[in-house]
Length: 429
Image 1 (cartoon, one colour):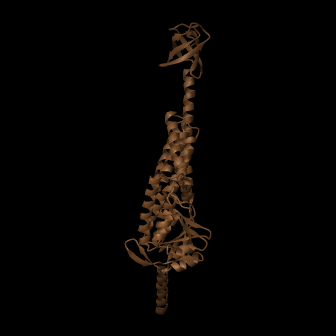
Image 2 (image 1 turned 30 degrees about the vertical axis):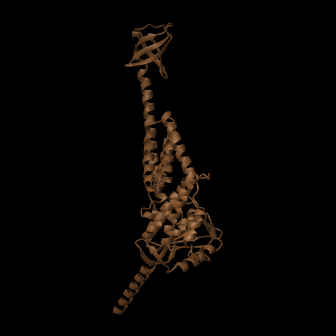
Image 3 (image 1 turned 90 degrees about the horizontal axis):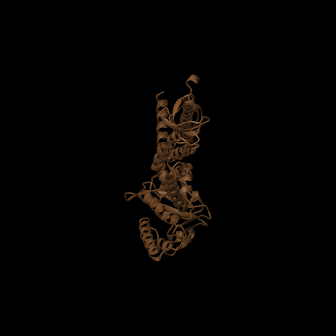
């Protein structure tokens, strides 16, 4: 019996030690332009890796480049990371152009599969227009000095990092490995990860560690990433910002149109997120508050449902931005959608009841006015039109009788803001 107990205990201890020894590598894929969506995606990926206890992050890279501002933020995050980034240009035929080439230099271990290329990192204007010489020289010199610092830290080729910026040169992955600009030329992902295993790399805090590669755990682009990718393109973000300001101006100068204000308000928050002026989480909170404001306004302002629909859209997108599965606070769509729809139902229900009450009051006021007695205050030359004072209010009237100022009249009907009246007769009351 004792021997059985000891055996079970040993097996449990062995299982615990195996579990503790197990490692994982978080895998992400960057296939689009480098924008605010990429920054947010990699930031969330690193949080997920820490949460899951992964000891490395594998980044598949295939990008034409993108925003220099977003690239700087990604590089800063990689240099400050205590988890090694393993970056591979893949698949065959892919490339790491411009911003992608700079990010590759910040990775702890980088490489490319055969038939891929890297480089062409000269800064250009997003519009494609020619840059003034002074501005071009300033941006190039700044980028070169910045990239050289990153390259020295990773002990890679300085000539490569300078030429891809100053001369917009691009090299095949095979050439880049020979120049020691890339660390590994891999046959495929598995080969790259196998060759990365055990490499000594420098992480934040000047600590040198050996790279560990474990089972791949995919962190695929989600709805939040796709929405951000749609709005974060620099040209689109600029147009969205200017268009939103224009719509808000129209709403302010023509109050009551509603639609320009709703679209402009949501678009303005989106553009601020795209410009990195609002963190995604704070942008999500702003959208939720904006959505609630729209739904409250729907109760009091006749908008034919525009405020309500805008509020629901704002609530949904804000919830997607605010709660992120990578941070440990996960809200699935099975929770978000019912909550948003329930809130919408409550506010639309209140709006319907309020409208119904107003209609009842309107009908009641018609009933109260009928057979009421008023006094003629003004009258035209015919005596059949003018104004009367009734129940403390002034109304327009029409009458078949020819009336004079000061006469008393009885209301027979109402047509909008005009009352049908006749001369007051005590015997008929």
